[in-house]
Image (cartoon, rainbow, N blue to C red; front, side, top):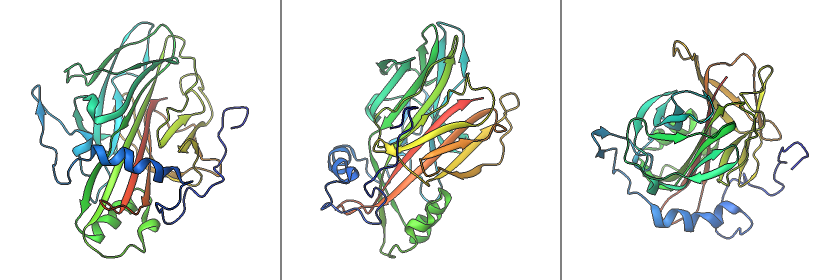
Length: 307
């Protein structure tokens, strides 16, 4: 890590074309048995649950199939006065359009609310509108952070799997995939949202997820110029990764055309100054694995904020 908080690119081969259980230095291998095996949802369970009058798409049962389905946290406002109630909803969908659902802690390995660095675990409340209702502190940058447990799904055809991979910028990784059917995938989702309270000052940081975004610039105090975000894989900068950027006008709700960008050699995404409104950045890491229950693992990382 450099003096200004930017993490350096990993020196070990985190993007090797094949992950094998015989490669102990690869941190992804070490976390797969412990994080996936105990918490797998069965493929095909679908989105069938209804609770407190709301039909909701709980992330660990949501299949992204051939189309990408982002998971994100959407506050109903992004800036607040001191000691306000922060209302936020959880969504699974695409390009800022999706199904909202209730917050159930057992779906996550970590669910935290950070009030300018003071963290608390999120608890189940049973409320569904909004999904979350949290009391802010007096000042600073606040964050809601969710790290999912694992789920699996099956892609019925190689064409479906390739279409999904191409949608998230990962077509090259699966080009040589054999046509054996079905293709089994395990996936994790990580979501963070940033809101500004009072003076809005503060600095974002990593929360220990396998794949996550860190805002190097506070969007509520950096009013002009590009905003920098760093993408981390196992806590280290992940260079040259595809990123999808979604934005919509804060007043009208009109969505702009999605942007396809990439992190640089230091894993940093520099978001241009002219991208304004409510913004989501999203990246998907898709890796082959040797495992008796699945063939690929994907890690989804989203970050929402406003500017």
